[in-house]
Length: 399
Image (cartoon, rainbow, N blue to C red; front, side, top):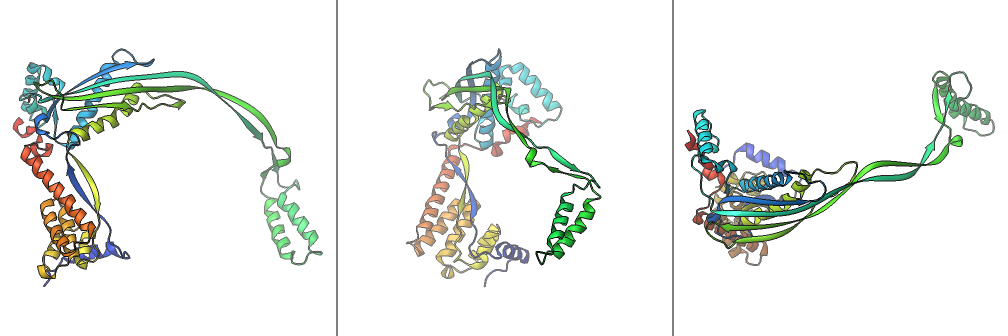
């Protein structure tokens, strides 16, 4: 006996799938390892040290420091979003000032992370060095263009002047009704329209009097362009040998138009994609993938999966006796567990599906993917690395 499913869920699933013969794909989120670094835990507190060297005709005094701060903020923000790193802050440079600020925050009841981090700073486990060489030039130019200018005069019709276009047409049609049968009704309509025309002024373009001349125009514009290089190295504390190192050619945007980007905007546009690559190289990250449902499985479970009712779908399939489940049922059970992030249970379900349908490569691919995700989650937990949502920056200690 299958377990009864709440009516509201069945109705939602039925509405979602109405008119669809093929079940939709579902999305699953995976935690993936860093692309170029295996031991996150050993370097998960970073001191970011950017060095920026600027050249070109737009760089001013102080810009190198400002762009260095921009690079540090961009990288810190992206690392924080991934959740496995903390970065030291320049406020830690003066521990007396840090302690005073921390005390003030505690007194005012603040739960901001600084209340703890400033009072109990963690020493950096590694230094992430960023060396940027950026050249950017802007040159004012004059842009010219020649084009044709057409002047089209208009003939103004005023009531009573006899120049109405519809009136002329009505007269022509009336004169032709004797020689062209069938124009009587059309002439009558035209005459009615001519009466309206005689009351309303309007204008019409005079194509015969149109003139054309060549005109040249010019305006100020700016040509801009540049190039850049970035070298990144990650060196653990107490070591001289980098555990990660990479060079980037920066894509510096250019423009030719009424305005030119500021140096800060140019630097941000050039640095952001490269720094995102650095984050993917050194930090675990998430990826969303699409999984196919098997429409041959239990129809009720398929509807629930399409509606996003993952736990209800699991209950529906698990209510089917093992001997009554098909390979499609086991596959859909694996999909439900995978979407919920239970990769171990998903792998077990896929294994049973493969045993019943060994010639189906799609199930084997799903099983391999889920097993890989389960292994990485186990490894990352065993390493002691924790995401920000687990540590909450220890802000609860700030009271």
